[in-house]
Length: 402
Image 1 (cartoon, rainbow, N blue to C red):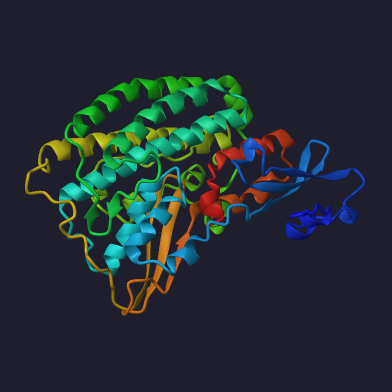
Image 2: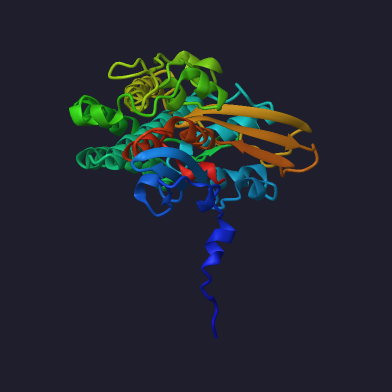
């Protein structure tokens, strides 16, 4: 029995190209980058019209993951949605959980009422996850443009973070640790000391990483003055995070919105300055991520001081004390947001006041907006530079096709 019969027109019908052969000039051709190509970060397909080595147009094609996050959320109670939130940006699950949980706590009027130890632990694990996410961004970007050693180095150091988070939660990447009204569990005994040892180990490694990549002559030649994104264009397309800050705009929701205990912490907002080329080029975006790793280290150190002094563990501390048994908020519309490693992750809630299941839960994913800018800054670039431009956006397709 034939279960599947190959038909050449199936691909054309399921994922049609924007450009047709009859519309091309005689010297132009249509190329398909991805979705299997590693430089397209897994499942992104780019329809490229090229004139020799020059890019004439780029059309991103989406729809290879089909996560259906928003439809899942319309059939689940608020607390059972958290594991699905983990899978939006699976490289920064703690940050995504933090954004979502803060939104539900606003619905329940719990904002600002949690013990400070809970808030500092949330920020601690979120910044550890921000480090891990940026390590993947910087390391895979090196792979995209031909540098293999940097990837091995950052994955080695990321493994330490993964083990620390696994020690807390029992999971390597998808945690379900930050709960509405609290945490799944307190930090393990001895975690603060082990984390301090890791930070002391990591600081000189960051210096090595900067010398290996950021100050590398070949890396600079491949990324400086390539994929220049002007600030006005980035704002108009809704770009956020390092992509926007790489274009020179000093905006970070941890400072702008001042959520959790971030107002009590001292850290800077790195921005692109065009030190090696033009403000907003690929080098600036990558440089901002490396500088943000240094700022995350500063935040982690301050959290560890608080967690071992003013807000140290006690036998009376219960991280689930304020976790509600049933989440049934009043009828309202609410939008909440947070600064994820890749930019602004926002959630729009609509509740009816009767059910513990949201009527609507819309995710505003930063990777989707950052992806949308690629056609604008790629036209006229070399084909080899297109890979560098895509990599500089640090895309995660779980956010794009959510």
